[in-house]
Length: 373
Image (cartoon, rainbow, N blue to C red; front, side, top):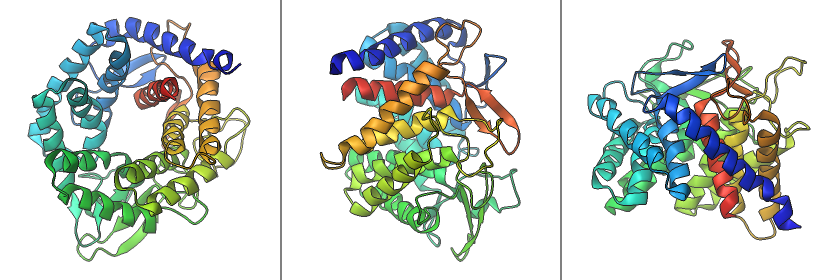
């Protein structure tokens, strides 16, 4: 019975491979971001945070299928990203998203030393963004979304970039990178995670004194709402923090956020863009939040006791199954993305019910994880 119930995982993996073999002929070594009328738009600024997801997706597939064209495209993308790596000025805290999924992944798969060097340079860039007064990683170099001073702005997405610092410490046998990652995680525990497991998106600090100034709504409905993708970053990121440090406080946090996330899921198990936004007929979902959270839940299920495992593994399976059944573009040749139903920035009315490259990436990661469970 178990094998029968899991057949959809192999079918999903095959659907992904067939779809990406077609779209890779179109996308090549460009950097897709989100779709417009079903067609992926591209960024030509190699410092944009989304650049790592397409080559990262290809590496996930290549790891199992060894389809050489996927590897060739991923390597070509990584080479192009050197422009941003060595230009430095425009880089931000999302260098983890960019080089963990590309250079670090390639190094782990093949031992390529140039890729290792790129990963270590990116980790050094990230470490240099640490504000010692406030114990936080500065998010961006400039901020056009609100009135906050970018010098003091930190956002929950940061948790997904910290594994780059833990990896660098392991590679170099030098704890200075992991000290920064843990110090920032402790600030997130204090200032971002609410008692009920919901999450702040943005917090502004005084960059000179380190004092907290205020919470900002960011891409959430309000300063007290619960942006679902932010919750997924926190859930997944805290699970990874525990994986690297084995410090119980991070596991407790991951479980608290996971329990909140699971409790807020609608009937089809795919989250709305904000769990506390008014429930209207037109409120959009965010499949990217569901895919990332599913990965975090699967990570968490492997870190808790055997008795707790099902608490997190079953919801993860339910989310991914619903994404595959209800939001997949498997037979739609006019849709280049794997998943529909992504929401980029609802408050700004940008990118509603579209494919997002990071949603596609985390869906592939989730199916890859399920194949290994």
